[in-house]
Image (cartoon, rainbow, N blue to C red; front, side):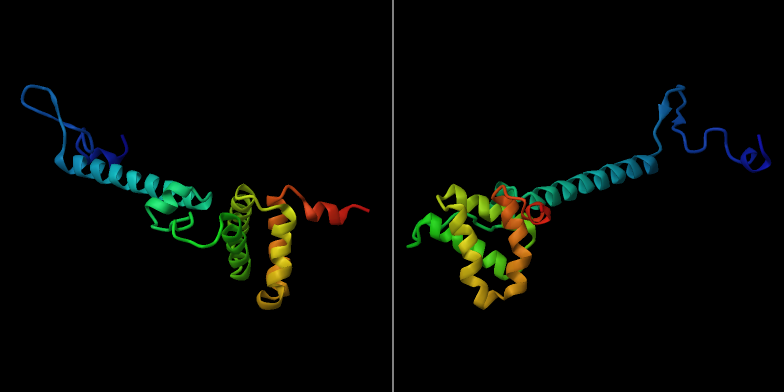
Length: 155
């Protein structure tokens, strides 16, 4: 043993032995283990929460964040119109691509056509501005199964 280690008790940091020879846990270590497990649980929870929000897990968004994603049952708007308005609103506020893809998917599921979704960009251009429209176009194209960037690179 080196000089620095020889001054430590032989069982330092290990469980202590009781009078009957059985190993006895150090209460301080038990608290540390519980704290570490709690931190691990919190880490796993925050990672799970962020993952579900990133992929727009509708159950989490509705139940835990309190954001209802479906139309209110008293809405005068039909589902397709409301879904197209959501696309427009998300484009206008500069939402990230994942939100645009999600809203385009919801619009398609509500009966909107690809042409109607593309026309949303034209309809809001005067109020949203060209920069918002051009920023959103590639993400909406991907949501509609069209890689506009690859198409622009073709001769």
